[in-house]
Length: 77
Image (cartoon, rainbow, N blue to C red; front, top):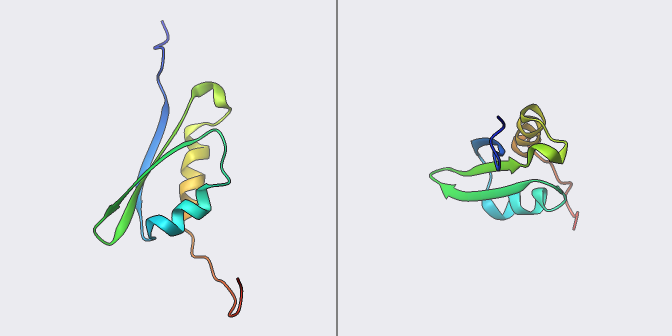
């Protein structure tokens, strides 16, 4: 028997501010994102419905991408 309502979930504390992460996750569809400032970083939880096409490994990769440093050239707006 399959549990109804069971979500795929991953979580990690990332060394970025909540506003910075909000901009990065705005483009992701089909994933629920919960964030909370925690010490020197932001606790990010990602959840997806099993029928969304996302697997746990996909959500882990997304966390890796969010954690990666982003360099912006001087004068970029």
